[in-house]
Length: 188
Image (cartoon, rainbow, N blue to C red; front, side, top):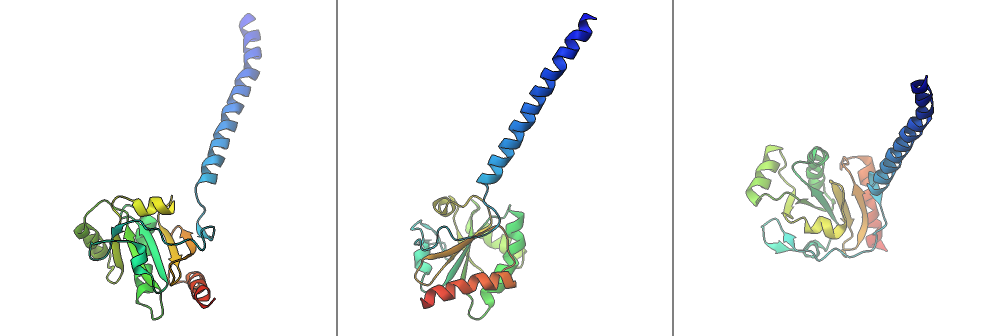
């Protein structure tokens, strides 16, 4: 009888503790979700200059993104271990071939050397992308990029128009609409 009374008294306490754990887990999930950037375009950095971070250009020479300004440029941060990055690379390659397209620079965030990056791109049929490297992830850090892929679109003067978090089909109507914003900025 005593054991039964204890069990009846302990049950509400056990249920309350379990509910508290579930509530804490839900709060942690909400906090984590709030800290992860949502997929899509974001314009909170519009007007900011290209970072002066030194990375390696297509010739494997030290360079900054400012070396690429003069026409609109789409900078894509990617890595070989990132499945969404690999999925979107062919669409970036196709975009780079289109007349009137912005300059497309694909910046590998892998630590591998030039030959490993080139071999990876070749294996995936990527032939025309301008491949830069950031083996120290300095550019992604200076941009505050938390998710790959992240693409940042700059106007011809080197000012950010928007950034896109997550993968996108860069040959799609959505991409064309976003890329037209750079042309509008240049006319202002």
